[in-house]
Every structure is written in structure tokens, then in C-alpha cells.
Amino acid sequence: MKKIILLMSVAVASGVLFANVFNSIVIAVATDSNIPNSVIAGKEYFKFVNPGDFFKIFSPASQFLTLLSLIIFWKSQRRVRLLLGIALLCYITCDVLAFSYFHPRTDAMFGDPIPDVEVLKRLSSEWSAMNWVRSLILLTGLIFSFLAVDKIYTSKNQA
Image (cartoon, rainbow, N blue to C red; front, side):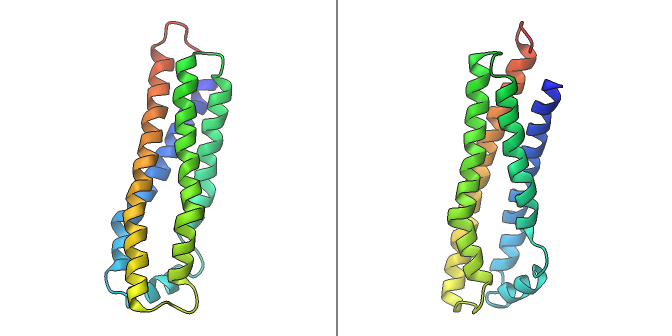
């Protein structure tokens, strides 16, 4: 059961990473394509549900499962604790970025009244560039999670 929880944490974190990359490749490019019309269309399209609804569920789930894995494997090996701790720190950092950086920009872009075109272009550009940074942080956390999985499965004293 312990390993299943660890593998679930990796699977959920992978999903969060890929959803974030999707946002960069599809949503951000579409939003940036024809400002202000694309922002107005996006505002209408995401009126009832938006990508944030996915992240509200799966980002905390990823953090919870990683924390649970850290607790479960706490006594196994010091290296596993370190790897899972770094992964958890990466995942939490992404949520801190979401609340401190991304949400204010998204609210400004899609709120009322809609800002002027130059402000929208700046906000969209900043959001797009920083989302790749967030994806890199998520990827780093995922690499550390996979290293923990590898360490657990290859150790003589398997947990």
C-alpha cells in the first residue's frame, strides 16, 4: 500500500505538469493571439469553468499524496526523505506562485473592466513566460519524486 501511495503521488504530479504545459501550449497562445478579442472570447468561454478548477483539485491532491509519501517513508532512508521533501517543496512553490503571481494577472485580464490592449499584452506575456518557469519547477519536483521511487525500488531494504 505504501508504494501505491507513492506511485499515485507521481501520477497526480505528472497530470498537474502536463495540464500546466497544455496551458502554455494551447490556452496561453490562444489568449495571446488576438488581444483584446481573444481575451473577451476567453472570458466568455471560461465563464462557468476554467483550468483553475482542475488545479484546485489536483494540485492539493499532489501535495497531499507527496506529503503522505514523505510521512510513510520517513523511516526508510534519509535520501528518500530528502528527495520527497524537495519534491514537496517544488509542488508547494508552484501553488505559492499560483496565488501570488498567476491569479492576480488572470483576475486583471479577465475581470471587469477589461484593461487596455497594452496592459493585456503585457499581462499575457508575463503570464506565458512565467508559466514555463512553473512547469520547470513542477518537472523538477517530478524528477525528485521519480528519484525517490527509484531509490525505494532499488534499495536492499525495500520499504
